Image (tube, rainbow, N blue to C red; front, side):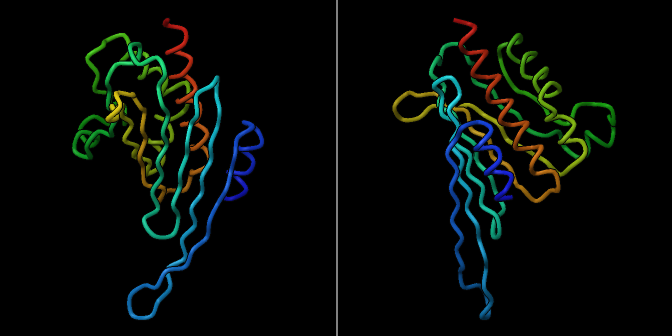
Length: 173
């Protein structure tokens, strides 16, 4: 995974660093954990990517949205297993958003970035949402478990997704 992050950092002209740690586990065992951090600058917007592999196997991607009025509140989750059993051809990812046009835009991004295909073929279950900080700054946050095989394509697809959100916010001014 280190090579993937280094290649993405070189391609996107970002900053990459990693930390390896060893923690004491149960009954004398050792837990080896690696933390990856990647910062990408896209049109003056900083995309921060944090992966923790070895213990929780979680990832978090954040972006501070500069043009907060353009991007509405939204939430992306996975459909339930029961829904997917009944409706096999339905999209895996679902969007909750009050703005119908933005909701359609996000659904289109699922296909253009490949997120829908990755979610369909892997155990990729992202939770993408916008939230407000205490300072009133809107941020876009993605949390997901990285316990699936196609980590590289998911990372690249999410970077493309974030870039498209930045482009949308800039072009809608």
